[in-house]
Image (tube, rainbow, N blue to C red; front, top):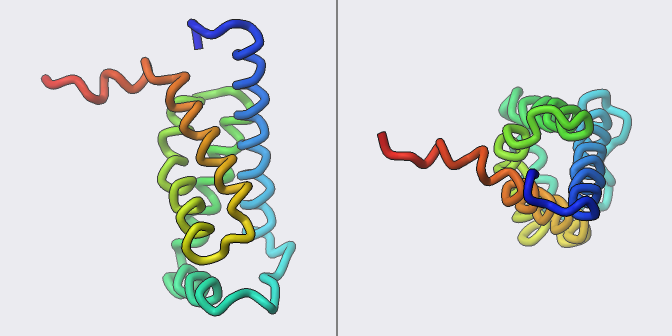
Length: 133
């Protein structure tokens, strides 16, 4: 984040904090069973949810990852790593809302956009991953 002007730095901090809070809230709601899925959920969404739950671990793995990355994003620690780890989940959230449940598409677009912005802002952190040895 060294090249950004002060307003852009503030914008990135606000965006990453909002993204982190969304992931924290989403994971806490699911992990602690605070909210039941709506009864009028479309059949494809129910099938997807049932498949995640049927594994016995996948939903919990995803939600614990969301919780940990959300905490790191809010705290500002290991942001580049958190953005990298959470990207496949963010992409899946976006695709889920494109193909299965379009109602949540605005939030999914926001999460994907912020994740891509964070990846761009921290691109120098990823360069060593692509060096040929």
